[in-house]
Structures are given as structure tokens and as C-alpha cells.
Image (cartoon, rainbow, N blue to C red; front, side, top):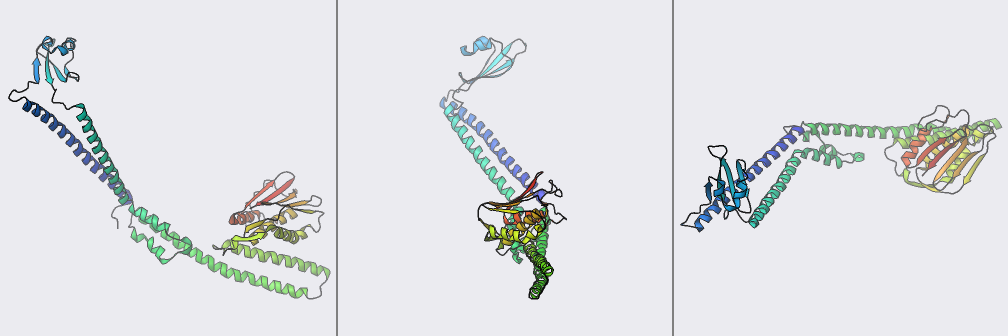
Length: 409
């Protein structure tokens, strides 16, 4: 479509604009000069016609300073240098020339009274010239804008095409709008081709993601369902006390695995189906998390104190909040040694605080974005990602005595 590159088109457009403006300004100055010449000649002819048949002698020569008009004698006696002088009050122009002897001066006096226009006419002429110059400036600006707009038109066209695209719902018309064949082989065409390839990769990635999450959802939930059914059958049989404890551990692990699988699938999906805008209460989820993780304190002399300062409602994904709270509670229980309690959980109107005494195995410089291989549940990095996805905030502060995890909304 375009034979030249964008850079060359911009350079050509700028050159054309400068050339046109230069030509216009040249004609304007030429016209002003001609107008001035015609104006002077017209004034002199009008003066001659007014004194006809006596021709005005408005230009005369004087050989000595004493022969000059009385108003110029004092100036001439000061021995002025060779040149041309103007006396506005007397309306005279005087040329000082050298005679044969360099010490002597001759004078040529040109009386312009009646030839020069009145001051009021000069102001009107200045006003007209200013109007013409302003008009030319506006026309030049408009011409520059028009030329540059034509030069960058393909860029604007591509930008508009990209702005109209809905990335989440790509259609055939979207690909047609940004087809590189519409923009030629210049820089804009290269950019359009890159955007086209990027959208194709995004579309392919979204298709793979939907296929994977759909397949993984079925394949991962099926064994969990089988295990859950087997546990229900085992519960109906007669079991020893130790077998019941083992069955409880398996049930808890199965429930954790089910919740984790569902949350990971939700994080992997591009769409959330409105799950991230549910309203839920914090207190039941915190209480449930404490009960699920209480087995970690079964052999420790550690108390758990829960301060219910409020019962706030939160907008977001309830499973995501439950997993985040479970992870924080698990970390607190696991890293609290015997006699180092209590573990304090405080529920406020805008935040949840989980505080535990710092054990020797916990690094105070631990970063919440790092995944830990030593039993930190899903890892504090996952908690941070869950909070970011739901619009919550998470922070971890540790000193020499205790660790405080804060989840606010």
C-alpha cells in the first residue's frame, strides 16, 4: 500500500511542508517589497501632480555646510562621517559624500515631506501585514498538521484497530483488522505482523489452557472422589482406635488435596465465572482452619487464642481465602515448639492477624515470595498470589521473638 517506509514518509512530509511555507513566505516578502516601491513612487507622482506645472525640487545638492538649510547647519558643522542620515522631525534624508579633497564634504538632501505616508497610514499598513503574517502562520500550521497526519495515518489506523480488539474474545474480524497485508512492508507492517503473531499465540495459549483445565479438572477430581468413597465405606466398618486416627488423617489430607486442586484450577483459568466476587464471612473459615490444623498441636503444649473483635464480610473467592488462612495457621502451628505458645489469631474489621512465637528453625529474613521445601504448606508465595488475585494484601513481619502474618482486605 505504501511504497516508502514510515521514516522516509515523515521526512518527505516535513520537507514538503517546509518547501511550501518557504515559497509562500518568499512570495509574501516579495509582494511587500513591491508594494513599498509602488507606494513610494505613487506618493511622489501624486506630489508632482499636485504642483503641476511646477515640478517639486525635493532633492538638492549642497557643497558646503553653510549652504544647508538652517536646521541642518549645526549638525553639518560637527563634521559627520560619510553615509546616509535621516531627520524625522524635518522629514529630510541627507547623504554625506566626499569631494575631491578628503577634508571637504558635500551634501545631498532629499525632502520626503509629502512622499512618506502619515503615521496613521503606517499603523494601518502594519496591521494589514500582521494579519497577513498571522494568516500565513495559521495556514502553515494547518498544512503541517495535515501533511503529518497523512504521513502517520497508518500508525493511527493500526492503533485504532488494536484498541478495538477484545483480547478475551478474539474473532475472525479482529484478525482481519490487524492483518499485516493492510499496512505494507514498512515499519508499521512489521509492527502489525508482530501483533498479529502475538494474538495468534495468545489465542492458542487460551485454547490450550481451557483444554488443560477441563481435562485436569476431571482427571484430578476422579481419584479424590474414589478415595472419599472408600473412606466412607471404611467408616462404616469396625475399626480400632489407631485405625480411626489414621482414617482421620487420610480424610484431612484428602480434603486438603481437593481444596488445593480446585484452587489451582481456579488460578490457572483466565475466567473466574464470578467466583472472585462472592460475599462470605471470615469467622467460620478461620474457625474451620484452626480445627483442621489442630492435630499439628496434638503433641505440643501450645494454646490457641482467637480474638473475635469483629465478624467481617469479605468480597472474593472463599476457597482462596480458606486456603490462605489454612496455610498461615499451618505455618504458625508447625513452627511453634512446645511451651512457646500461645498462637494468637485476631479477627478485626479489616484484617486478620496470625501471631506465633519464633522457633529456632524459622529464618527472620525469610521472604514471603519464596517457596519453602520444609513444610510451609502451599508456600507463602502462593498466599501472596491468592491475595493479589482477589484484591487483598498480605504481609509477613518477623523479629527475634515472634512472627506476625497479616491478611487484610
